[in-house]
Length: 294
Image 1 (cartoon, rainbow, N blue to C red):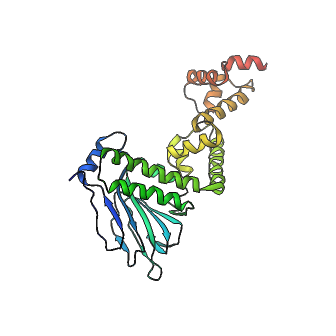
Image 2 (cartoon, rainbow, N blue to C red):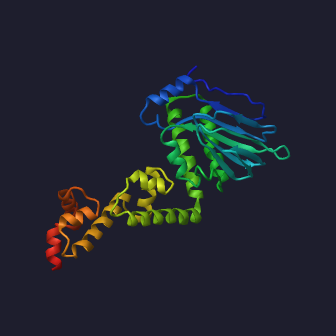
Image 3 (cartoon, rainbow, N blue to C red):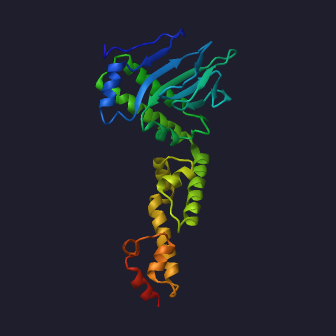
């Protein structure tokens, strides 16, 4: 039965509803290139009149729901939000939630469930976030093509190629949402990174970890590093190192401070490490730099 498509009936005409069979799921989890991004459920409901989902314990998977037409709602963290055409919402894993179609104008939706270490990073690459779990999308035609092509493949069964396609499909979905973010999202991301750079300048003598800077920016480490390099051209910690060495040069101009005192003022406990890092960034040692300035 591993290659037989499992179709769950929910009572909506022309619906499509697929769940990854246990044996196929084990194959996905056994492979290094798919185990961190597992798409477990995919579906399509046309005019889902009476549709209602209530989960008191949440799921192990993250859920994405795309509303193509009609209207609905979802409830997450005690807040109810109205869903209109061209809206997408994210239900994070393990979160209590409910959602459903409006009685007067029931929605048409595509949806997907996915879990694994890559999923949340991919989702936060889009305009969605834990605090802003709903956004709009514009490329309906591309979205329909993505889902319909996958559904056609799933109807033929869970071959190895299809299992790989499931993971690629989720990446493609998040890429569509990332492109949809548009100029406003770009400005917002740049503001986040600029604020993080201000924090780094303020803590140049009391360094924080990369994880701490990312958390202050409200991002995961991978998301923070990606956006930082995208907007500044280098990694966050390379930028921070440049700041510390620039500050070291300013302190070295003060002839009353020894090199050891300069390294301490910048949070370096090991003077030899400070000197090696200074030379790596500047091309000369701290003592040689001081001689050049005299």
